[in-house]
Image (cartoon, rainbow, N blue to C red; front, side, top):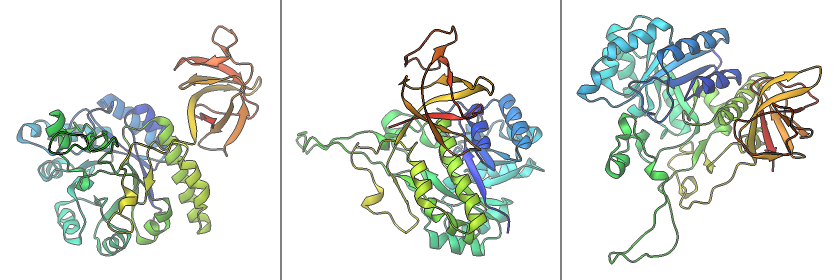
Length: 396
């Protein structure tokens, strides 16, 4: 049996490279056309060419989402677009519209077409339908429980991809029109306004506020680390992480954690869940749950108030360079920190370690006691070697 694929999201070229460095076997990204995440930076063809080259150098793959629900006017130019993706070496497109899928399958000769989670695939007949269309992989609906995933993998004639981590939608497989009604933005064509995450108050029929509590329609994020062994045993081909809008630090933490957990399981047959769950809390910005893995969700999987569990550590800087002789690190600041703060170093090929900030200076060599200007370049000593694209966190 082939090792399970770890599939990471990325909203731009920088984040895609970070995801690959931190252990992603493949990344999925959006192009400038036909993609659901209009607010992500998304990729020009030149960016995709650079990403494909980088991915090949690191034995990774690149998938591009063309997952809008297309109207007639959206069909124009689609074949030319996917042929261009095939030309530059993209491994697969992920498609949520049968019309777009049909057009792609008629013209492509090398690039795969994967059936998106937005197609709500949750039974074997649906899997066979898309297999017969020519899709070598289907992405299951996030509403499938673990027992169903076992059954579907057992009977499926094609590869199964399933979500393991990330945001969950309050509507079925992301098919939501709240944004259409509330903001005049089409969520199924790239314009989701995250209306379910807004804060709401309840009023009675006389427009009197019932109480001062606020609530959301929001679900907790999916955190399926403890189901990783089941996914592997079931025969899932690819573990998908949601989050094309997430930061580089979030991706490094989540992808790096799942990479280590997967490798540990293949090596020892066990996973130190407590260790990796603690690591995941260092970047979470919303409460987490197991989603639908046990079956239909309960109150435990929903967020009714705005009180969030805060990340246990705050990302403050990215390493740009390091001089092994002087042991001086060049960093780009992202969030507030100061002299004498205890920082943790997180890298893709090291065990985490901490150090205390001292003798910090700017590019002019002037002493800096408080770092409070995002993207400022700073220098200070770190005794243990660090590399470009390591992250620094403030220990709370």
